[in-house]
Length: 198
Image (tube, rainbow, N blue to C red; front, side, top):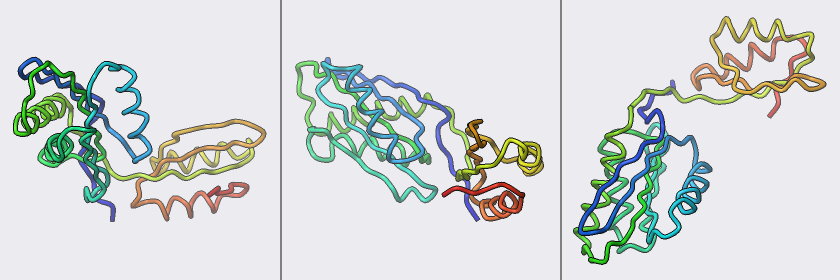
């Protein structure tokens, strides 16, 4: 049985300043590791004169998939304090990236740890925490004549249609709770003319 997990509903921002240095933290909901790189690249493009973009993320209901990156800051002074804020907030499927603008005064390792921690905390405190259930996608293909039957199964079982393509054949992506995945594939597979695509 899939357990639910807590994450943030949408991206948020937090700012922390210390002795001229400015730390802008951005928290993002993510669903996989593939989401991380484009978000970091977007921040680097938006803040071309910043010194560092340090980050941490945590994924999965058990929180076992995580990473912390100091991006050139002293080892353990940036990524880890950010990750610890994600953990202490009890959320997962979250990326927090902190953009640092150097203010001319060195903060020292303890100063950096505090700054990255506080900036990350600000962004997470601004977020709305929501409970989600793990889901998976099922890709199906079927002729237009079967739309009514497919929609009936989806409606009766409260599945979600996340993508619809009405080409020569219909290709739909159905999102279902992980706990209902096997039952959903059986129900959809049992429909005449409906093919499950891997």
